[in-house]
Length: 466
Image 1 (tube, rainbow, N blue to C red):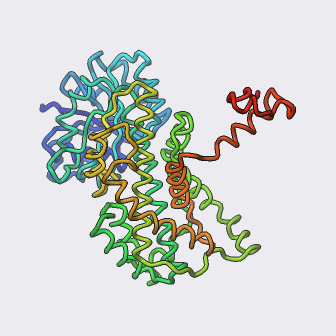
Image 2 (image 1 turned 180 degrees about the vertical axis):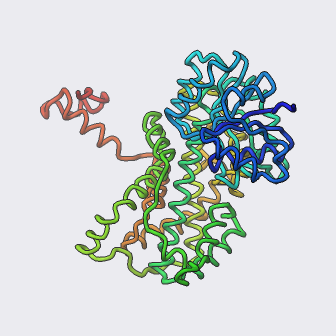
Image 3 (image 1 turned 90 degrees about the vertical axis):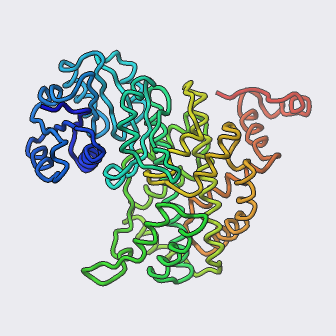
């Protein structure tokens, strides 16, 4: 009997799609799911790929079906389920066998597992692209020992998306939890990108009175230029979609509340620990949380009146505002990754990360080629200071400023675009206002009003407060 090149546990949406992708690329794969009926149905529906898929009905059977040293991908929910699966596999695996957690794990959990002295090898792996990506080519971010990544790299690079230059969008990010950390920042940028697109959509709908179809055509036009990206592409598609039951635009019948799986929130939390400012991402997380408070929002509208009013901005200003917001968001994300590298001792390849994100993942964008080039020139330099993006921002910022100003005056909620603008203005202000904050802290600290004199002020901070 042919032995599998790799195994996979968990035949949910993502796991099933990834398993088919692996089989399609010519690698025999053994699969197991906790519910045997799911495994049988998956194999029965695999069509021409069924010959490369080995269905198993127990963990022992799964392990026996894989050529040693074994590699087994876990596609199970993040958290305790991963620990439970590792514990169940432990008695069946040899020390050189490799377990790969390919779920949306918190990188702290990946760090813990990597240092826990497991009786087998362990690799954390971020996979982005949703079901479509998993089936036809995701972006893959590996984290752990380089030798463990190298063992499975031929399979991962074969199933990954290919950039336009033919480079596979799969690489090793760094030690331990680095792969899952980079995936979390990817998801944080995804939150922000989606929120900014939604804000611009709201201005077109409520401020300019455009129909969903007109908005869709606008997004489609933008997708032919600087903003060419997966998220703008699908925004055009969903804006133009019609609900077959009501005949109304699909956007008008979808519930006005956005959910989240937690990875964007993890990014915002970790940024605080790293003292890495990512206000656009934080604003996007906040906006999703507010969106869920439908009853409170309706009560607010009843008390104060509907917020958005007509405004006067041009479509090309909205496009330029979104370009500026996107650059600012990505700049914050890469700066956070750079801060994590310093904090955790990871040798993170920032241009390599940009290249991995060029295809397969949700935030894939035409801008990432130029970002990879700018990061290769100086990884420690904030992207907004790279000549290429500095010029783009100089051209686009007046439009972002006009859109935010008009939006605020007309009652439009633009939290992500506004946060990006405020961050940019702070980043270009050599003389800020933090001296007032420091003076306030010092005043209510160890010294009373009578100690606030010129001598103290000229000699620096007067003391810390408790």
